[in-house]
Amino acid sequence: MKRLFRALIAAGSSRAVPPIVIGLFFLFYIGVAFFTDETLITLMAFTRRSFFLAALLALIPLNCALRIVRQTTLYLNVRRALHGKPVNSQSELFDEAVELPASTYDLPELEGRLAAVGYKTGRSGTALGAWRGISVFPARLLFLIGFFCLFTGILITTTTRTANRRMVIEGEPMPMPDGTGGTVERITLANASGLILARTLAIEVASSNSGYGKRTFGLYPPTLYMGSFVYPRYLGIALYFRFSAPDMPAGYETHCSLNCYPPGKEDNVAIPGSPYRIVFSTPVPEPGTERYRSYMTGDITLQFKVLKGKDVLFTGSAPAGGEFVRDGYRLALPDIRRLVITDFIGDYGVLFIWSAGLIFVAAGGIWLPIRAFFPRREMLLRFEADLITAYSRAEGRSRKHAGVFHEVLDLVDAKRDE
Image (cartoon, rainbow, N blue to C red; front, side, top):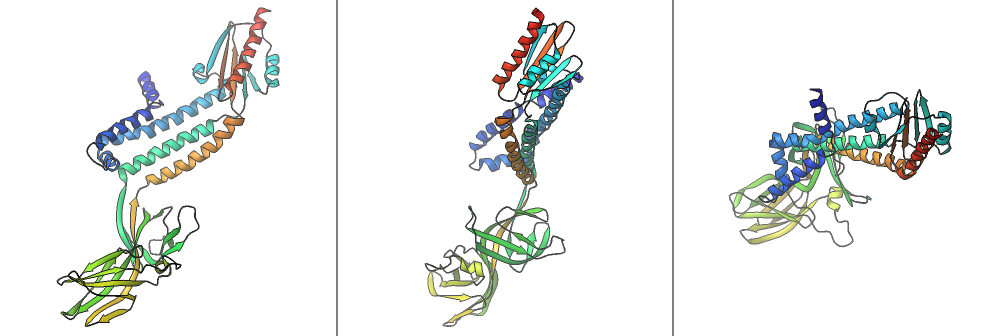
């Protein structure tokens, strides 16, 4: 059983596991591509519904976890060995192992030679350890933790992600998937000085009984609110209007949402049971004026065309609270509010993915200067009654380290010939 368990652990911690799993998913991706254009979405849906595919994807974070344990164990064993403590399977801890016949030796002389070329030494009984530089183990450990977080996030996102698209309207409660949040106080669009976004869109939500306090949701990064990430998507207008015509004495009134952003884009509302249709748009600003002034200031003016069948009866414009009257026709706009089509995403996997990005940056910041300027180099000599065993490993500048290592071996071997 112990052999089987060790074999399973060795297989699970193999570096070949991630490439094999990714390769299998790539083959699935190619197969799905023959049947649909939405290949990635379809593959994610298959993975969500298939226990086999989810378990296959879970092998990667499991492999990372096992490699973290393995790398930590190897690092601690190397430290124990360099300080003369007995360690099992020493040959697995080092890159090179050399055996020499026993000889007379002078440990202080060896220590002096190694100290002269910048190595620190530690002696314990019949073992002599020497090392120089800084180990990249912390960076290697962070890389493995980063990969663990990355693929754990992908697994969580693929198998548990939920998405709900709602209209967020000024003055109305925040329409959360699991209820309602605070009241939407204001939706603003403003100039930005960022390198990527020229405009910033913000949704300001007043405090509510949920205990979240006053919050502001922008385009990026998304904010977690009441268990969902808030992604504002598209601007629009929530309109309440009244319309009457000579052949419609009772008139008609309704609430509607208009997709008329950016300025100049049209959207229309058909009057039920009549030949009338009203086409709304926001005015296109004249050259030299602020392009999105109506959304930035909240002073929204709507242009409209009233159609009967295919014929345009008249055109006009009116601000919020205004009305337009002509030839027995009357169009009133009592209420115009801004709205944002917003996605509410239930996906805790993105927390792991963002964490992975930060961890990779930290790992790279540690690894690069150590590897470039302070690479770790180690050697261990064990002197027994009839045998001398020497071990060596290097994380950088291996050629120079190999020269020092073989010089020490020559020195030890020369003592045998004397």
